[in-house]
Structures are given as structure tokens and as C-alpha cells.
View 1 (cartoon, rainbow, N blue to C red):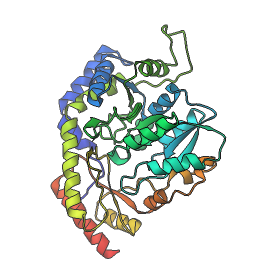
View 2: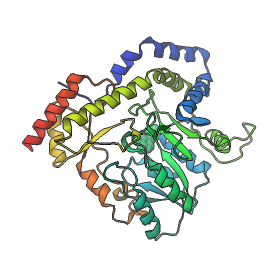
View 3: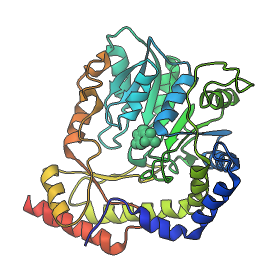
Length: 373
Ligand SMILES: *Cc1c(COP(=O)(O)O)cnc(C)c1O
């Protein structure tokens, strides 16, 4: 039996003709840039995120860059980021001219470790001035924003949430989007809420930030389109993608519930065999990934592949060891948890359209692979 990591085709069949009709309506309206579907989507996103404002943009990487630009982070500044994340988190920091300082992660949640954040700040030997923390909600689990907020407040650092993987998650009943000063997300097709191309959004309660972000995503426009008040970007969400997302939002809660149920089923079957993910009390993950830790990871992954079970390693190299980042002074510390994780994590297929038979095949194949290696 073939078990892929993702099944975008199954979701497409479930959505049916609604998507076709929504796309046709946009094609006929001709409002391809910032059409009415974009404002409607932003209103629905803001409501779901429990904040005053959602600002859509071109992708999740631009969203982080726009957040840092709106906060005035730039040359001479430093930004703390977890080293165990997708490259975009650190890349956005460098793109605004600032310097990343890499922080280790927690061995259970895989998210930025607040204690190591304090150590990173104390031990930083570079010349830049720390201005912000970009936490990441890895694999769908919100970072520890309560702890991060009190550390950030002491030094007046801004707190940004990179929620590219966690839109739809909650912590203590509060939705992702409302947990940090500014939250960013991505609608890349493989994210929990994905479109049919690139897309992203930002969330904030601040009317001032909302205005700045709307200016920055259109070349820093002032009140008049050709009066450029600041340097911005060209980063808008296509109306066609907004129309797709509006259709997908209709089934998003059911999809999140399906992901939760599948994760619980994996946990029940695999708890004795490997180290399973257990979100902390009060946290409801968006289950962007179901990631286990195990010895002989590479051998097990290839044995699973031979049985038709696709898996993925997120991430095989912590960013402080990646060529593009290794020269920054903020990459020079020992970050042992991330080093260990990059050697033993494995993400298994988990998406809302995984069938019970497919899930059983994953569990069976994993058991066999573990015995053989
Ligand atoms: C996917 C991802 C991004 C970037 O999103 P894009 O839409 O692909 O630009 C940023 N951060 C994290 C943690 C991600 O997983």
C-alpha cells in the first residue's frame, strides 16, 4: 500500500465544484489584485485568530520580513530565532539587514527554549543590538509565549510568532494569531491551511501595525498610491488564492479535528515503540507534522520507503550549521538539543485524508522496520 505524506488530490475531490465556481467568479470579475475575496478572507482570518486585523501577503517568508520591517528592525539589530526551523525564519532576519542569534530548542516541544534564550542573550559577543525574538510554532505546536513574553518584556524586545505551521492551533483556549505582538503564517500548499500556490498573512491587534503592514506590502505606499512614504515590498495575496482559501476555510475545522484524531491514534499505537509528540497541557496542535524520535532514523526511513510509506526529515541540519548562517557570531554557541533532533526526528504521514488502512500500514511497517534495524 502506498502512503504519501500529503494527498492534495483527496482534498480537491472533497471540495468539489465550489472551488471551480469561486475561481470562475474571480476570472469573470477581473479583480486579480486585492479583489473583494481578499478583504473577505482577511475578515474571516482575523475573526478566527481572535485579533483586530489580518493582513494577507505573498507568502510566509515575506510575512516575517514585513513584520520585522513594520517593527523597524534593520541593520545594526539582532533577532533571536530557534535554530531548529525552516530556513525562512532566519532568512527574513538577514533580508532586513539584521543578524540572527540562534537559540536551542526544547527536547519535548521542539520549540525555542526560553532558558536558552536568556543564555543566548547573556553570551552574545557580537556588535548588533538585540531587538526581537521570532518564535516558531514547529510542527503545529504553539511556542511557550507566556515565558517568552516575560523575557522579551524585560529587555523591550518585540515578540513575533512564525506560525507558518500552526494556523488553527490554540494555547489555553486562545487561537494562534493572538499569542504574540505580531503573528505570521503561510498558505503554502502543504501547511495546515494551504492554497493552490504561494500565500501568507499577518495578524495583529495594533491599528498602527495594521496600517504599516498594508503600506509595506504595496511598495510602502502613502495615502496616495504614488506618494511612497517608505521602502516596502511587492507582496500581495492573489485574489484567486483568496478565493481558494475561502473555500478551504469551510472545511478547515473538520480537517483539524481529523488531524487531531489521527495523531491520537498514532500516539496510542506507537507510545511503546518510539518517542511520540505530546503537546503540553492546554495546547491544541494544528498537527502540521507528526514527528517521532527514534534511533537508526535513516535506516528506519529507508525501510519504510521500501514498504511504500513516505516519510520526511524536518530538519536534517540546524540552521546554525547551515553554510549561509555559520558566519554570524550568533551561530557560534553549542546548541546540543537541535543537533540531537536533526539526527533522530522523522515525520510520518498525517493529513486529514489519511485512511485508517493507510495509518495501520504505517504503524505495521514502522514496527517491522524497527525490528529489522
Ligand atoms: C513554510 C514556512 C515558512 C515560509 O513560508 P512560505 O510561504 O513558504 O514562504 C516560514 N517559517 C516556517 C517555520 C515554515 O514552515
